[in-house]
Structure formats: C-alpha cells, structure tokens
Length: 143
Image (cartoon, rainbow, N blue to C red; front, top):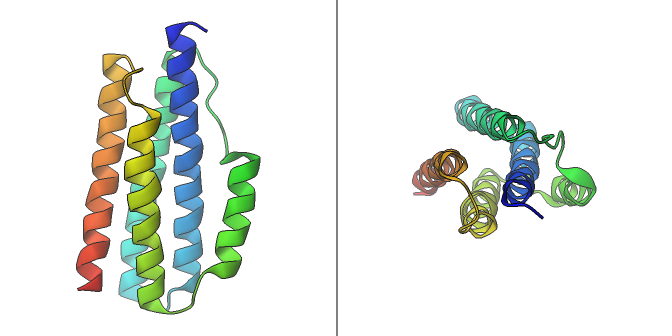
C-alpha cells in the first residue's frame, strides 16, 4: 500500500468517527430539554460537521473517496448509544464528554500517529484541537 493510500484510509477512519460524533450529538440534542444547553450542543455539532467537511475535502484532494457515513459498525454503535442514553442532563453532558475525550481526542490521536503528510497532519490537529475545546466546554458545564 502506498503512503498516500495509507493516509486516505487513516483520514477515512477519522471521518467515520467524526460522523459517529455528529450522530451522538444528535442523540444528546434530542434528549435535552434546556434550550440554552441544546443550542450549545447544536453549535458543537455544527463545528463537528465542518470538521467532517474539511477531512472529506482533504481525502478528495488526495484523489481518494471520502466515507459518507459512520459505517456499519458505527451505525450499530449509534443505535445502541441512543437506546442506552439517559434522559438526565448531567448524564447527557458526561456521556458527550466521555465520547469526545475517548474518541474525538485520544482515539483520533492514535489513528493518525506518524503516517500523515504535513497538510493532512495540520487538518487533523485542527480537528483534534476543536474536540479538545468541546471537551473543555463540557467540563465547565459540569462544574
């Protein structure tokens, strides 16, 4: 596998995970009653959608075909997540924080360790930094 193909596959893995994040935030938004909090989650979701768009464009620039969903295993995870998600506001915030910390930051960093070209690396770092900001916003909501 050529390096460019590896980069495309890693970016697609990150993109599928980003779609999972969009879907998870949708679940959170649906369960929230507080309008102000709902708007904060919607704002985060818009930023995550923008991240997905940046990743997809980079894949296209590399002559790859971007993923257009979270994939089959992602859909299964998403369905289970929606069923098991609490209606309690603090539980929703904690669930979102856990997802962003575990997948949006830590797992994303693992996916893309060392194999990316400089432009792809810059985009991925932007996405991960954005996820870190979201996690910090959620931490502040819990305190």
